[in-house]
Length: 321
Ligand SMILES: C[S@@+](CC[C@H](N)C(=O)[O-])C[C@H]1O[C@@H](n2cnc3c(N)ncnc32)[C@H](O)[C@@H]1O
Image 1 (cartoon, rainbow, N blue to C red):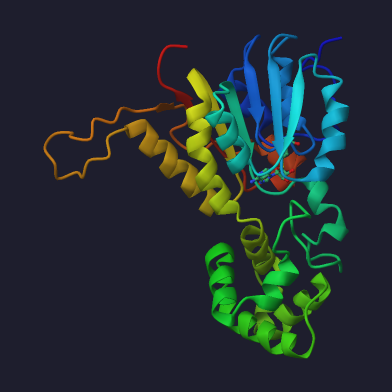
Image 2 (cartoon, rainbow, N blue to C red):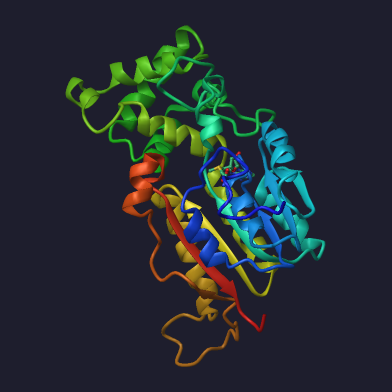
């Protein structure tokens, strides 16, 4: 039987903003879907249902542990599907360069519940585990490498820039002092150092005291912002006229990159505003489908609190479909 949106999901994962993504990407039978962040395959399954057995899916993920999930989901998709393991910035660039064209591209950024819920991956401050945080466990650096090798100023900049951590300086200093005695290996050691470095009242303030440093390290370890910046141009290049791209981000730094990129592509012209007429001759490459970022509904928020920070933006490639 072909997958159908009304069937129970073929994955046990509820995709964030699933219905909104499905509406905005408006996949039709015969289309080629590219899911740049396959994860547990929740979005892929939902989108592939619209293909009604005609079309294909290209799934990308940098995490090798995703492959078995892909194999499981693939059997239920009803269309040819292949899995390409690697960073989406590289894979999308290769696909675009090889002339592969897509009708729908999705990037659902950040880490998956599967990754967070496996303590041994080291993404969470809630459990003592190896200090790792790599989405691709074969890549470098790990969070431990960064914490043990980066200079104090670099650590401070990472915590401030990617985590908006108020006590970035104190935490970076405490890390450098502690690692002189013994390198960091475990998440618990880092959590302890953070707690000791910040003033006592801040330990009980806005969420877990290690939350912002862990977010910052994860973004730096996986070069999440660089990946996004490099991937977006290739994604737009890959779209057929009328093809659509949707991006779900989970913090303001990512959302800003998506917003600015799509706005610039929708504008086309890059001439300085003081020029009376356009001399660059650049035409818009996309039409915005979302003027403002789409947020989860109150119902989704109640059912899935992890969706709270999600923001969805989408655009369609210019030209006749
Ligand atoms: C939020 S999850 C995606 C969940 C998926 N949409 C679903 O419904 O199951 C993000 C996934 O994208 C992968 N990922 C994140 N950044 C990536 C990148 N730059 N290149 C390739 N995969 C990436 C992660 O390994 C993770 O599996």
